[in-house]
Amino acid sequence: YLPIGILVAALMVVMMVLVVGADYFGLDSVARPEPRAADYSNTRELGEILYTVYIYPFEIAAVILLVAIVAAISLTLRRRPNTRHQHPEQQIAVRRKDRVRMVSMPSEKRK
Image 1 (cartoon, rainbow, N blue to C red):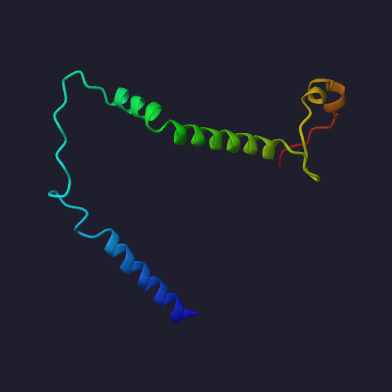
Image 2: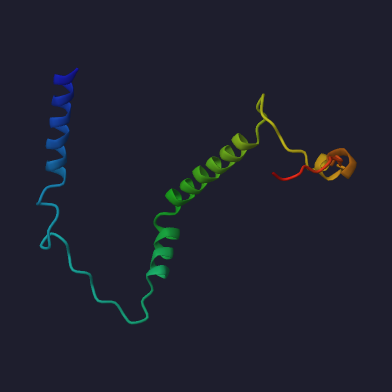
């Protein structure tokens, strides 16, 4: 498996170099941002783009997260055999005489 693994790793390195090459990154390949007014808000711009252009991907991500939350809750609340559970109603109903036992012992002399 080693020769095949080395070949696959070399191909992946070559592909990454081609994708993330110097042609795609550099100061001359990135456009300068246009100047904005003093009252410009990144948050407002992000909200407008999120709820207009990217509304469907945003809603799909929300549904996926909701399903993940419900799945996590259902996994934590399932009943598993051989697990101990606390019963608060039994803990509250305990009386002192059920838990505390007074023992009378003679004191020992120190040496």
